[in-house]
Image (tube, rainbow over all chains, first blue to last red; front, side, top):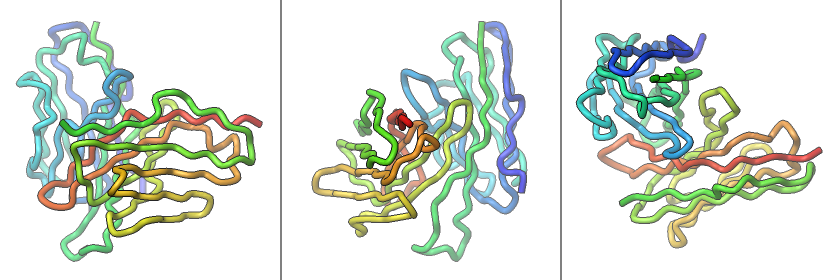
Length: 120
Length: 113
């Protein structure tokens, strides 16, 4: 398996522009997570999906951020308009608990390589 | 508010020694706690999961303890090697109603040859 795939790997944009980050989770995984990592705040969960449905978006900073998961193999995180304080590394992760995993599931999250976003 | 604390200072140890990393949490009662390893420019990689009813978990040279009374988890690497140099993140989670892990800021470990 190719693992979690993210694109682009690097993005440099100017303040006010729209930015779209993309993620392809591991096939068969039913959970997808978007994180943001900065030196100051560490790794923060922005939103997570279960079976393509957003479950917890309490970490989304503000209305400028939106995330979608139109199908089990694709998700996007959009920032519009972008601001310099959005500069960070954005990670996507996926996980599989399955319907019959019960207490023996591993709960492992598999992270992608990240997208380094710089907003000038 | 929930707070996860890891040693912000880098930890330098000599090759062959045991490295011990600390994760403390406050205003929180997790049922699960994970440890991840992160290398520069890469995403975190899962290492171990420990549940609240488990005192200790081992995997090869790794050992994790979970003390719900002290609200602390310790992560040990025995017979450390330079290849173990990385940042280690702890991430606790409550047991029900959420699948949300809260990550600490990580401790950078450097194993000196």
